[in-house]
Image 1 (cartoon, rainbow, N blue to C red):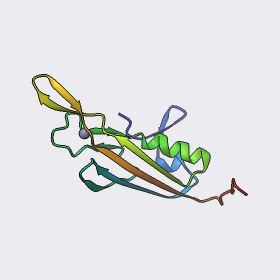
Image 2: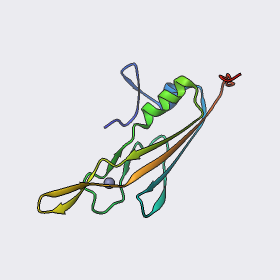
Image 3: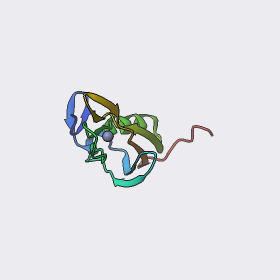
Image 4: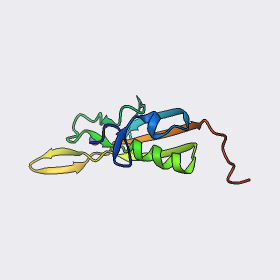
Length: 120
Ligand SMILES: [Zn+2]
């Protein structure tokens, strides 16, 4: 489980890894077909637990660090991702089914350097 940011094999702080980021907003909403629940995400909580009480493997595998790094490389300002829970519900009698919960993640990055308009 990653608990930090990695740069050339070294664990570094967020500021060291992404010196050009002025502001980072991460918004998360967890839900299944029936309900949606707002959850709070930031650059320091990389492992989010699934709220389904029947779910056995309660952690979303969000690679926020990788996502941020990819956005940073491309100077993207907005990214929306849907991450499915990798856990299972135990149905009894040795039966299992996939947990249907998922996480909608919205990442917004503001950069210190002015953006180059790719469409221009
Ligand atoms: Zn789950």
